[in-house]
Length: 135
Image (cartoon, rainbow, N blue to C red; front, side, top):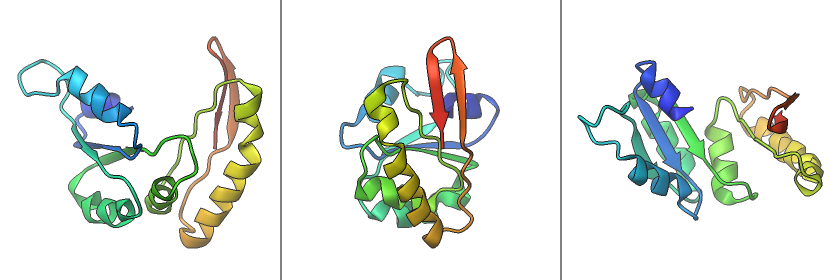
């Protein structure tokens, strides 16, 4: 999503909010250096509750901010959701992942009490790669 937004001409900030650092590793492997022919985007690591304040501070500097907050319920994930306009939560088509939907729905309800503008788009799509759910 970040690359598509950058290709569309957006000034993009990609935030790695997961302690595993997968997004930072991807960005380093991608090599977002000017002159390499790839769409430019800025990638940073922000973990913990401070992500909410930092995203608020950075909101006006970027047209698109995408946060990878990881899959587990954490302070980082909740703080990012409070700051978010929209959340996309992909789930693979496996039983244990689908069982967490009640917990996710409760978390989203908690977030909406703090951020009433938070948009939730609930849909289920079956595709070639299986079931995809976004809340």
